[in-house]
Image 1 (cartoon, helix red, strand yellow):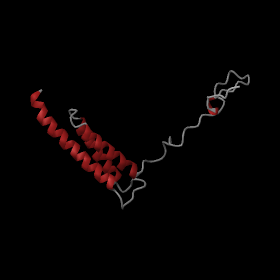
Image 2 (cartoon, one colour; image 1 turned 90 degrees about the vertical axis):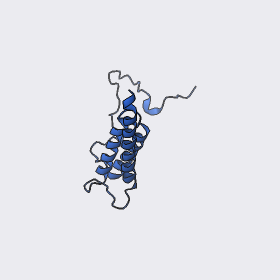
Image 3 (cartoon, helix red, strand yellow; image 1 turned 135 degrees about the vertical axis):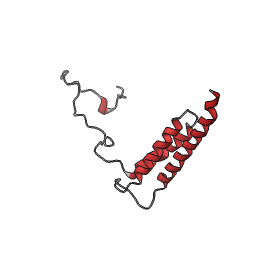
Image 4 (cartoon, helix red, strand yellow; image 1 turned 180 degrees about the vertical axis):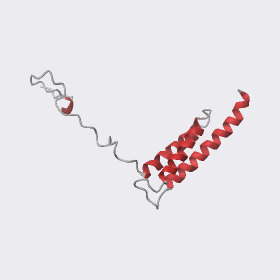
Length: 119
């Protein structure tokens, strides 16, 4: 007899009840919590990622400028006093998010001014 390769939680229960396809109640995963507010460090990380994407996509005719503005906006949202989980000491990712957003806007503006006359 061979062992089943199907995980136990995906095996069907063939006890004669063919009408019920779902034998247990569906419970969402723990990270799927829509009632939890976004914390300050999550805003800072998002600002850092958007700023890095704005630098990487500066050549895409305005996308880098939009992502840079979004990076600055989320970094400023991270530094608001009413943001949950705000730590007054360490806001390095927020500052770097602002700087990378500014760099993405600058690179995008320089690219647009250089490329638009040649189109």
